Image (cartoon, rainbow, N blue to C red; front, side, top):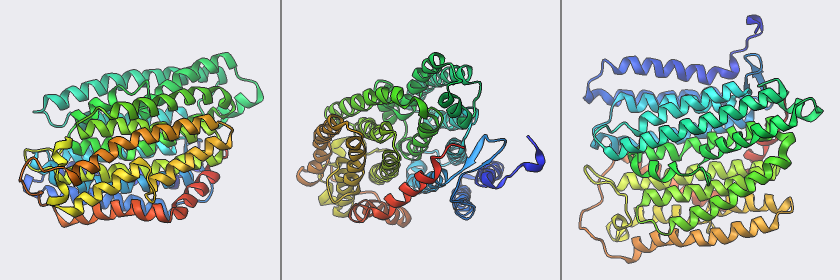
Length: 485
């Protein structure tokens, strides 16, 4: 690498965040528990700074740096802005919850920011090693966050399961990448695509590596049959950490899959398309059917996540710009739904009592009709009921598979979506028609959380009525980013 040609501008948001989190980490050592709000505010200011830098340095075309290992393109910029919003909302939603449970400390904020840094590296990676480094930085921070409540055996067990299975999946992914390197002689995404296209690659070895890569990617998405960790980790982790797992990482995982499959391994589309069809059908089936039997809300939303990842994969397997744009739109919408859903659970939790079961939502409409309405909007959107934006997202990915002739797959998606509507509507029924099991009033939280959560949920309704703006941004970002460099 020539230092004279080194361009740091594409990586400026990552450099800024690394510097900011290092300062926060050191400064937090000198703060007392009563001054912990300073760490919280600095974390939010860091996210705002990252957003400003990302938007001001954004280019309408891909720009490479670090000898082609790092790329700044519209898809990465859109994903990063979405991740900043998700992380900022998560910190606001979680503040009261973590304070009540004794881990309103610097570790939570710095680990969350390191996790964000890993995701930012993931979405801008143009080289298999950069992808893997970003993935591991995100994963290691998440393992620690899940185990943050050291007095909770459930959280410790969830962290161990997540760590062991995550290490296994990372091993499979790395093994697959090594096979692709052996087949093509390169780890650069553009050079891999070129070698597979011009026939200079060993196709048998590349196919062998592809199987392991798809398995590793399916684990990171939480797709069946690599979904075993999702319900246990969602239920065992503190709700604030569950929100961290269920929000921004899904957006990063989507871009991660696009970088590897739709850019690096695009010439093998006919091979990986069949694998993704199986993953999508199994995820929609197992996710929706198993969720019906759940009474724990976090576990139910975990199986819901699995089914949503099945829908997300539908657009990816289409292998077309329209399908990938639909999947990007779906990923953004899912993050908004997940933030609002877990945000309501955090809002309804109080010191010593977590809102985790269906019984905890009984009679919510009589206690606080506005909070019940917010949860209703989230459940309707997740079920894909118009005019919520979840309907538009599902329609977009189903249309993408119809356009490539897989009409039967779209029909399967519709059927499982109808099955899934049952457990979402059951939550609404419990809130509006059941009697409350306790007379405890809804806990009081800060105005910032109430306003942000209301805006978050109402956005699901507004975007459902006028989805064209967000969808157009996704289409344009994908169109500009899909060219192989």
